[in-house]
Length: 403
Image (cartoon, rainbow, N blue to C red; front, side, top):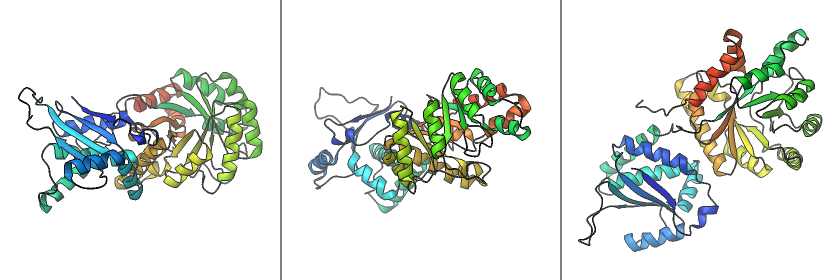
């Protein structure tokens, strides 16, 4: 049994809002399990404000739209119609109102929709916040508890794993010789199952060299993602080589590694110009950004195909509370980017201890990981290091407070 989600007939928001039905359905399945209602089912219909206002007037005598209405299954008026025992009823949700409330509260649309679904389901099983203040508080607390326990929901379609081989080149450049060769290392990563190869061609050429990128373009069998700044020289090289995709990143000569996301808001003109040039060459562009709504909006406006969410602060968190806060920021940002029509990747600082919660986020398509895998490879070998990381990424299971 399940909670069945669908758009209402003729819903105007169908083309306006990008709703990830697999994500909501999985969270609904988990909700029923937490409520011990696995054998029950209900219908959830997403409407626009106009149709919701009609239902609100017809059944509650109130004008205007509302966010959610619940209609519990009850005794049938006709003797020859029997309602199945497992039928809970129907839930109507206004997409327009949910989207407005999400914006006002700084939430993703999917976050707000799930809050309303939980509220609606509790009404179907007998909770009513209008009976008393005490019950309203009890219902509110239960809703918050249920919401927290259904967040880790990825059980299928694991994200791709792309391996960054920059640090193989770092070791090579320390001696100025030919070994170890990042091109050879990339081949080993692919043989171990990696779904893509990532290299960052820096302006100062501190690790990856032009020669590496040219050879990788010829030898990589999966996907080559070229990380780069917006400098004209690097842009011209990318257009000559034509990688499978490019990721625009910030770059400072004195930094040891990329220290934060690219500020699209402040660099919109330059970023948009680079994206336009790449689009003409059929090269998709990803923007490496901090998980902030303003940066997501700017990435969309600039014409990016992907965003790669910077996971550094999540990885560097010193306490469980801080890490949980950073994870929630990433979760909301991933859903917000998806809703905006962007494809979503993530990376920076992910390792064998912290990768699985990020891999569990349903809208993330690919994880970019380098330093952790190369460091581990120094101890156990590159192929084994990649296989271990693949196992973690692809076995990311639902996590919750009860597990």
